[in-house]
Structures are given as C-alpha cells and as structure tokens.
Image (cartoon, rainbow, N blue to C red; front, top):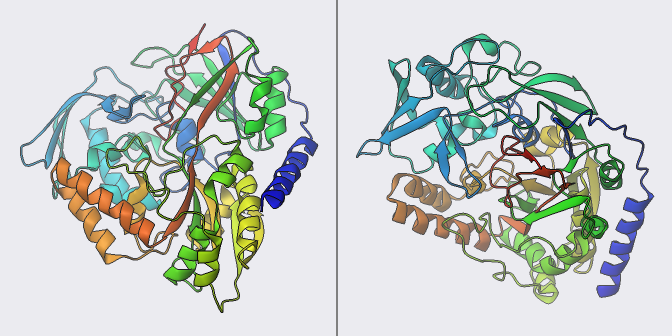
Length: 493
C-alpha cells in the first residue's frame, strides 16, 4: 500500500511539474492595484440562480453587502444594519439601517430594499440553499431606516444565514441582468470581465463605509497550480487566494518577498456518495468505502499533511463540533468483509481542480486495494460539474470542497445531490433550528453522529486556509469562515 501511495504521489508531482506555466503579464499597474489569483472562475455573476462558491467568493462583501456579515472569528456583526433587536419569542427582528447608503447605480438603500431582497429569495431564487429563507413570513417597512422581519417560527439559523449570499441586498432597479451586471452597495463595482481570464473590480466612489485600500482589484483565474505559483513569482499576481499545490510552499517560506498565512476554513473536502441509487443506496457499501480509505495517508499524499481530519460535516469553528474522524478507522479487511460477493465499478466524477484530482487518485488506489474499481472523470468546474453531478445527480462518487458555512443542513434535504433521506436527521435539524441554543447544540451533535453512522459521505479532510502574498499586502485573516474572499480588510504595508 505504501509503495502504491508513493507511486501516486510521484505521478501527481510529475503531472503538476509538467504543466505549462504559461506567461502571465503583470497587472499590478500601481501601488493601489492588487491582483489575486484563484482557481475556480464564476460561470456568471448571478448567485441567485447559479450554485457554487465561485460567485460569492468574488462578489459577497466586496460588491454585494447584507444586513450582517461574519467577522474573522465567525461571529455575526453589523454591516448594512447598524443594529438589531430580537423579540422575546424569537420571531421578530427589527433592523436599524445605516444612513446615506446607495447602490452603485445611484439608487438609495432603504427598508424597501430589505423587503424586496428577502422576499425575492422566496419567489425568484432557484439555488439549492434558498430554503433557509422559507421561515420568513413577511417584512414590514416601519420607516426608511427601519425594517422589521417576522418569521413564521423561531429559527436559530436564520440570522446566521443572512451572512451568506442569501442576505445580499438588491435594488429593484438593479436586477435586470444579474448574470452580467451586478449592482450592490459594496466598496467595489465590477468594471470588466475577460472570460477564462479575469474580473476587474474598481472602488465604488460613492461607498458609504470605509474606503478600501486598493482602488483596483484584478481577480485572476488560473487552474494549473504551477502556473498559479509562477504568476506570483513573476509578478503576474500579488496574492494566491488559496494554495492548490502544497508541496510548493517551501519556495515561498523563508523568502522575505512573501508572506504565508496558514489557518483553517469551514470547507469540507468530501467524498460524495450517491445515496439514492445502487449500489450506494446500501449502507454496507458506503461503510465499506469509508473503511477502505486511509484519510491520514490521503492527506499526507495529496495535501502534504495540511488540513484537519473531522469525520462529519462540522468544522471545529462550529459550536457542535466533535471529532468523529476515528469512528471509521482505516480497516481494509472490514471493507472487504462488507463487500463480499459484490462486484463494484463506480464512476468518480470530480471537478477538474487540483485538490480533487490529487485526492481522487489516492482514493482510486485505496479502493482498488479492496476490490472496488473506479473510473475518474474530471469535469469542467463549475459549469459541467454543477449541471451533471450537482443538478442532475448523474454520478456514483465525487470529491468536492463544500465551502458554505454550516452546510450540514443539506443532509436534511432528500433532493440535494447526496440523495440522503433520513427522517430522523430531518426532525433533528428542525428541532435544532427551533429550540433553545442549548437544544440546538445537542441536536446538531446528534445529526453529525447520525450522518457519520450512516456513512452518508466520507469527509476526507477540512481544507486548510493557506494564502501566499507579496509582503507589501497585509490584512489577511488566518481562518476562512465565510463564502467571501473579503477584500475589505486588506491593507498596504
């Protein structure tokens, strides 16, 4: 087994080092211009109708703002709402709004826009997470600077959900072409886009809050990890938003031209299993695959040991976290026993991103050791993967990084692409949302234990947050806890 893993690691190294770095011209035209490298490019700008993390990563908090946001410690803090109160029955939220806020098209931001935006999630949005707004009964415009949101029942998760893309504020005058022309209240506006290459953000001259340090930010999209690293080394970009080739870190560490920020995230790299169709609708098969995978070896081989083993859809930053990573220890003999008499040949349809390709080859090797054949099919991400795997559920296995905060709730949705249908989990999630904070923690721990026991997926590791930047760029947070790559706190050194 060790020899096979070593061979996989060597093969991966050859593939990565053999990729052409290409040539990336410098886009840093001045000290107030910043270029940030990413791997996954948005398919469009409309996160109300397009799933995936790439759009909110670019636009949330930067172009679009909500009433509240997550700070670096994962706490809900004011943004467009300068304060709020919650009624004793936990159903009514009164938001006092910031003054002198305008959308980038000049329209004023008022409580009418709060009503429009929150109710529009219920009526016009189509993405999978929109159900978090179903609990909103109605929104009252008490005054231009006072919006009252009334829920149909108490919800512990509702205010937290407002920190995500679901809480983004829109103007009725700014939703005609969301896919191409985002209109928000944030510190930046979308100035231009070159598909397959970059998005340029320009500082919003009429921004109501603290002006950003950089007047121009170029979001540069480079899928190949070697090319991404070389772009930083050759001054083509100023920041790598997340290192995709961890073995390359030594070339930046100890070099005073660069700063390396290392922390954690709430992004679970998950071996998704299609619970809704054979053979993975059999819990014994899912358990066998989970026993067959040595997650520590996978982390060491595919991600240089960085990241955290978790065992369920809960990162350590959530209040109901428990380390469940050893419930299914690496046990190939147990896997073979559970699979006795079965002849499995599974399609592993993955995004064509470095972390997924690296992890998939290790998973394929380890499953082969217990007699399970797999075919790896890289799909263009986000468009093709989202359509064929996420929407059409046309897959057996996949490997995907889930970046949405507290997305354990997706296991309560039978139509979600997991295909997991547990009435107990659905009831526990409902109890957690409506109960006291103490009841929420207790119920969520039970949810995590149940989906772990059912091997509803295999949580390979929690993705590390590793940013590399030129030393002149400061203000990065150590842990990535929101959907946004938040540019608002970055600073010139």
